[in-house]
Image (cartoon, rainbow, N blue to C red; front, side, top):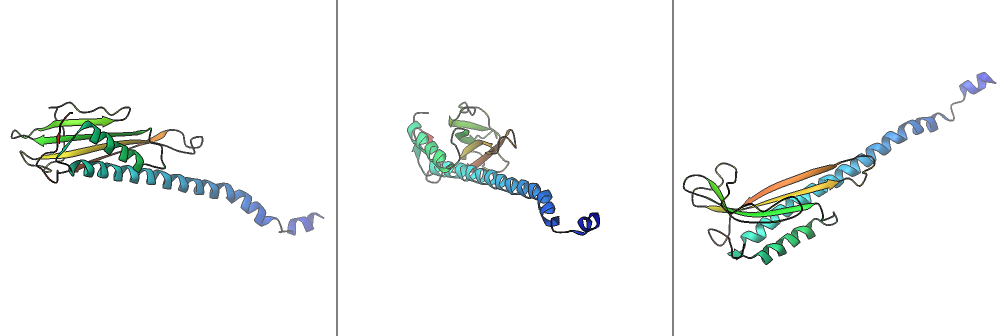
Length: 176
């Protein structure tokens, strides 16, 4: 009886599958999670570009205009939740002394305040010359995994986008 049992190979593939199945499932859910996070990060980057693009197409904007643009940003993040999205639009000018100063700034979101008018801002070297201005959009998105029990914590994505005004030298905000 023991000799016959030792030579029986009928259950080998079931045992191998039972050993490999948890690893395969872990890879599957890990890949699904990576794809969701990557998609959220890409949407956030496109949102930053679109918000800057919508502002720079105008000669001047108002608080209501910027609120509408921020709403477009919220809509672009769908199907991801909008609550962790923080947006800030800032118009800056490089002065003759080389410093880049804030002309106006508006923000929406829990932890991203508007920049103070006249405050200094760091931008990449060579982006604008003295007397030139640009619109800087900063977007922060806290991505929380749908598999929160397996992967605790959240990932913070951030993106800054710089764009020059299209129709005028400087986009003005009439009531900021």
